[in-house]
Length: 395
Image (cartoon, rainbow, N blue to C red; front, top):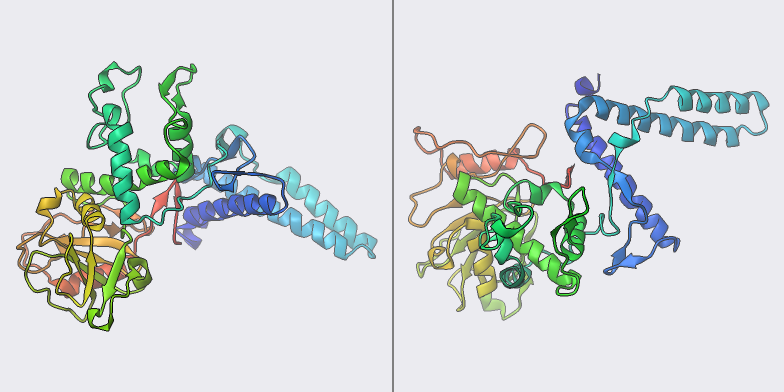
């Protein structure tokens, strides 16, 4: 019945549960009942709701949905009993309804409902996913992580074979299945197998929480580029790296952040010395490594150039001439290669599934290119959303 009412009801349930958990944490922190760690509220319990099981097991999801409805009914019945305190029959009826719901509700098994939580489980990165943060994260990754995880973060570093457990591929689903806060905790405090043996050392004595957030920014950008090189698509939505942009150079040296252009379609062109033509369908931004470009909107600097190189999966020297299209929600959705003649539907590398999450890009077709207008129409209709830690963002 739920599927008939709303095919995306599981996603809405996941968002509701996560919102309740985050709201509870904010309430406890506001009341002074839980402290802070790394500058953000600390989750006070060792467990949280296991959204992964809910997402993959429809039967369990229905149980959880039924339990949520029962809890809501119990709360309403108890509130009604307070309002009807001068009417004994009404109060008894409300208490009876609450008791009936308590007994009849399909309470899920705690073993399926709960997962391990850490004090940082619900923390979010404070970096803003800036190009500077990604660049610094790349340096920190090279200094601390390459030996085990490899230059490309694929898990095949020079010391990988000597470890008790092979390092995971940080370019795949694992990076997105965990919450950012869980990843932060594991990097700082290490990981152990079910027998208690250390499988990854903790880096709390070598890295600050801020530096780990920067490494995670780098890993997200790197994973996008590695996926593009490996399978020719962005399986997860790719956020626009933030950086300084200057529009209308004639007006003076003032700069603003790229994120302030949210709500508009953007075309980012990696400058190659050729004039950048404006297009009324976009805000066109010319990206250069150092010197100012010729475009109406210009973004210069090595960190931003490096960030887009990572996303494109190419060396910085090969980025010139590449174009990117960013949708109104700030996701990088399409790419055109240097020297490419026009756009086609195959250039849309991150598409939407039936539930709004990203799905593989369409395979290139032998049919004539549909052109930029068709690509824009498809992109605008098929909005994508990030699924992080099992929960869709942006519903």
